[in-house]
Length: 199
Image (cartoon, rainbow, N blue to C red):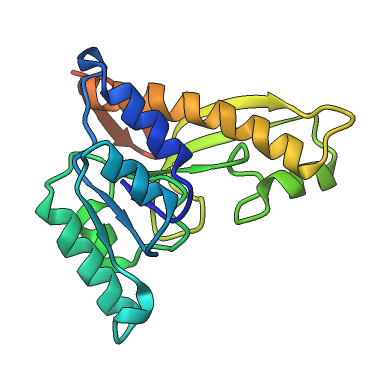
């Protein structure tokens, strides 16, 4: 897993992985910043951690290559970006494309980017939510693995709405990543199917 902040999605997955029936484990947690709560959560759970800061590398491409190499060392089946606030590059996608997922606090393809909850409120939608998607070279544009709807209340502000989205997002992430680990998944023509390949 890759994180940049508090690691609440990471904690939800760590808690789920404590049950052997969940069928998955977090093999390592990486970050693009030192001293964040996400790394402390991983260390508390006994999970190996690593940090690659962009500023410690001569270029964004070198950072991407170093991040990719370290992730490869842990041989993950799926890479989960859990609040990871950097776009991965071509080296990372060449290695992990099709098996790296991220969440977005809106119902894609609506409201991509950093302001999903605010833009949903500004637009006046009655329902928004969260999306789990396979990472590609775009911003929140990859094939959709799962979505969960969250009603917009009349008295919502951005913080209240975003907090409810995050709660729904965590539950969706835990459920879906567990299924991906236990059942496998396939991607055909942008359609993500959980379970063994169709015959």
